[in-house]
View 1 (tube, one colour):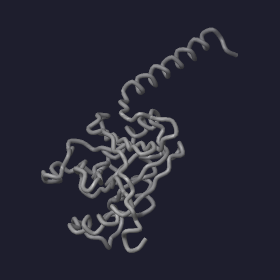
View 2: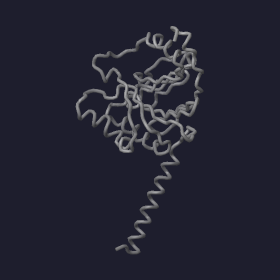
View 3: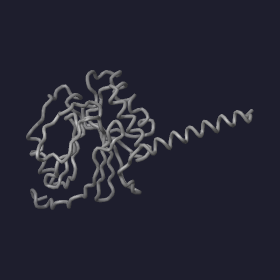
View 4: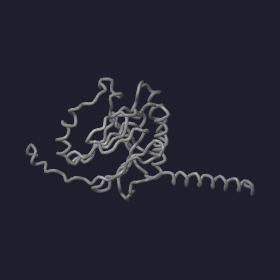
Amino acid sequence: MLTGRNIGVVLASLATMVSTLQAQANRVEVKLPLRQGSVRFAVIGDSGTGDKDQYEVAKEMEGYRAAVKYDFVIMLGDNIYGGHGPEDFTRKFELPYKPLLDAGVKFYASLGNHDDPNIEHGPDLDLRNQLSPLLKLYGVNSVFSGHEHAYERIKPQDGIYYFIQGDSGKLVHHDFRRRDVMETSFDKDCTFMLVEVNGDELFYQTVSRSGETVDSGKITRQREPARAAVGGR
C-alpha cells in the first residue's frame, strides 16, 4: 500500500530520472537537420578492440541515437581485432553495442584486414583509380572507408567525397601524412559518424568519444551520368 512517504520517494525518483534525461539531451549537440522521412545511420570503422575506447564510443553512440534516432550502423572493417572465438564476438561486438542492438539498431559490416587472415595490412595505391570509373558511372557521391586509424575527409575528386572513419576503437596519432587532397582530419580522439540522407542531400556529423563535434557539413547529389554512353549501356 502506497503511503505519503512512498509516493514522495517515487516522485523524487521520477524527478531525478527526468533531470538526468534532460541533462543528457542538453549535452548532445546535433548538427543534422532531422527532417521527416529522412534516412539516418551511424558509421564506425576499426572498432573491435574490446578496449575502453570502443566501449566509450559505443556509449556516446547510444546517447546520440536517442536524439537522432538512426536505424542502422555501417561498419567499415577491422570489426574484430585479435582472436575470433565466440568470446571475442561477445566482448568486442555484442557487449559494447548491446543497448543499440536491444533497441533494434541493425549493423551492416564489411570486412577489413583484421577480419580476414588472408588480407595483408597496407594501402592499395591503385584501388581508387580502379574504382573511380565505376563510381562515376553509377553516380556515387560519397565513399566511406576505414583502415587508417584516424578521421579524414578528402577534397571532392570528380564530384565524389571520400571519408576515412578508422578510429572508432583503435586510434593512432599521426596515422596519416598531410596531403593536398586532405580537406580536414582529426587524430586526437576516437570518433564515429552520423549521416542523414534526405532527397538529394547528405548531411554528416563526426563526433568524438567525448561528444565533441569535430566535423560536419552537407553534400548535394551530383547528376547521374548517362550510362548509355559507356559500353553501349
